[in-house]
Length: 307
Image (cartoon, rainbow, N blue to C red; front, side, top):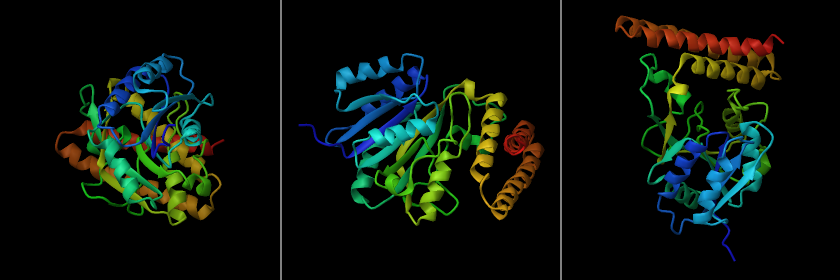
């Protein structure tokens, strides 16, 4: 009889079979002996050969260790919620489908949950791997758009205004019974780049007093190619972020909406402040892109609130 897995690692994927193949391969290159995990692939209605990629690894690693499910409702939040329901482990870790796992990624997560079974959630460190040249307008302040997440090399609890990133986040499965699932109005849907579903969920956890930890040892590399390194793609992300903010606050009080507006206004002022040193150091394109980014977020926000 197969042993119940301790941790379920979930990869939600949509039409990225080549990246998925590389991601699974990098995970299997970890030393997985005696870690008692399972790898669950949630196919969010892909039209490519995603299923064949997973079947290839199932044949060599076993049906129990690697599992495949299909979620036909389009949207990352739908896929994640499906993964939560399908997971057999007591703990869950979500990984993106375009990552390369560090040598200690899997063991770091397993060790953390063994040592902290009471923890509600945690987030791992993410570095960006550029598969194509980094454009001159891409400043370090825009790297979080590409998944960059680094709060240092020391394990700690997340500060009040910081949260894990979705490409490397883990949970005690029991918290979903207490706090509910991911909000399906938020998050990516096919080619729509909405966001904030993770932040909204982590805010629920923090409001409930749950503790969220940062794990520097749980390191992975988020791969980025030239398709994501264009102003058009950054604009799409920014507009999606603005739309997600509008949806997240649509039913909130006037006070909370005003507070959110003040926060966005402050970030715009900061962007103007960053523009000046970039201009003085002849890195004009970096400063301009920061200002455009704030403008695009506002466009996305008001495109929802105008309806």
